[in-house]
Figure 1 (tube, helix red, strand yellow):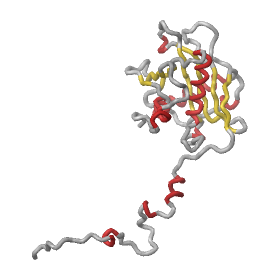
Figure 2: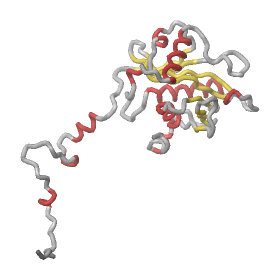
Figure 3: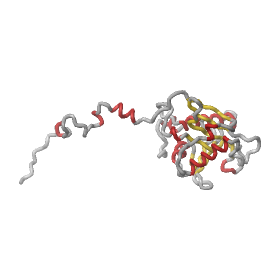
Figure 4: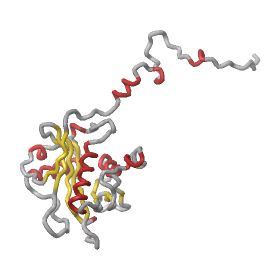
Length: 244
């Protein structure tokens, strides 16, 4: 049998799916009547009602902090957060060995829902980077930041602001006023290398990763002088290229 050399005319009918009328087995995205509704259904939930950012100095007897839970697994990062929260709520101090002379500086920036429910919080102090005194002044140190398990994946607005974003920004502003006299000091933190949510949060807020870990933990530092309210997203309109 000879092969036909007659050119084939491509008509719209050739691309029409072979589906019976009324069938829903094939629904092209560009022709979906409810595509907008479907897209809205995939957006993260947004926290309803009023929320409040507070700067707290006295933690003893703080019931919401003592029973705070960021997860219910056996992950080391979650266990450390729970232990820190309970110790602070009991009136103890976590970061005593800061190597900084003068009165102890420990504060918490909290994001709370109506009724005082604790959504997210960030604990800050001042400390020399990696506990090595340097010619410069000690910087800000974030020794705990977490979001309640019930609010994982939630956002505060349509821009996609996470609860941890809100407390991080406010904590940086507080450290700028308290430790830098209005000038943003360097700020650093220790993060477990396998804690992807925390590493991504610090990347988004322009904390650079040190090339070498310290005591098995990743060191992330934010250079001095950066605007505390500016993130990578604010400057580029996109996520950090390393925020996988």
